[in-house]
Image (cartoon, rainbow, N blue to C red; front, side, top):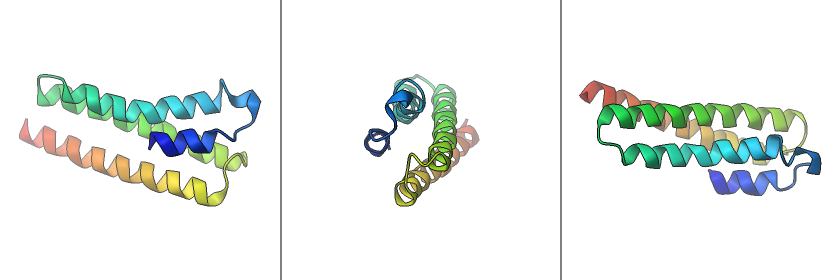
Length: 104
């Protein structure tokens, strides 16, 4: 998810480098970083908490993708690709969190 976001945001207007470009890149990287950090924790409850943070970052990215599409910084096919990926990530995280909570 992070690589497509970096590639797509590279064409954003220069004045957005510290705004939407930075926010989208940070949110996309944060998804995987929270999953990785949660894997290193000692309990399933801690892991589930980090997965919830990853889901929050995915929701943030989802919103920013809609915004940049509406601002015409992204064209339709690139937006659709990002949107489909983030939707699948959110579904997967939600299912995994439910599984961890059911086991705990």
